[in-house]
Image (cartoon, rainbow, N blue to C red; front, side, top):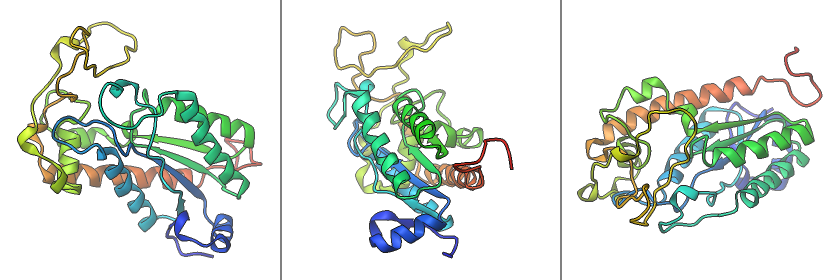
Length: 264
C-alpha cells in the first residue's frame, strides 16, 4: 500500500500508475483557464494559478492521483476579449468526458472534476460529463466548483460590496500566488451597477466589448480589486483549501462501482 499522499499521473511510469490506480480512492481532473481575461490588472492565467495551488494541496495531503490539467474551456461570457476558448460547449464536454472515461478504463475508483470556474458557466458542461460518466460506467463522480470552496467564512474576509470577476477576491489571491504578474496601478473599481436586477430567474452574464450592448464592459471585471491585499489572498486560500480537502476526504469514502448508493 502507498502512504496517504498523492501523485501527479504524468510523473509516474505506466507501471507505477497501474499499481497506484488499485490503491488510490480518487482521481482528480483539474480544470482552470490558462488564458482568460481577468481585467486590465491580472494575468490571464489567474484561474490556472489557483488550480495549481489547490491540486498541490491535494497531492501533499491526500491519497489522490491528479491528471494533467485541462487549460482550455468554454467561456462565452468573455468571448469578446483575448484568450483561448473552446467555443462549442459540447466539444468541451466531450473532451473532458473522454478523459474521464479513459481513467475508468485504467481502473479509477472515483473521479473528481475540479472546476476553477463557477457552476453556471464551465460547471454546466463539466456537470453533464460527470453525469454521463456516472451513468455509463457506474464510477462515482463529483464536480467541485469555485462556488463550493468560497464559503461564508471566505466571503467575510473581503470588503467590496459586490464582485464576481477579477475583483477583490481574485486579485488578493493572485497578489499572494503570483504578485509579479499583478499590476495594481491598473486596478479599478467597477461594480456594473446598471446590470442589477430585482427579479428572479437566471440571467447569463456577459462582458461585452460592444458599446451598444447593455452588458458592455470597458474593464472586463466586476467588483473592487483596489481593496485587494496578499494577506487577504493567503487567508482565503487557506479557507478554500480546508474546504477542498474536506470534500475530498468525504468523497473518498463514498460507495464505489458495484455498490448501491446509500448502502454500506
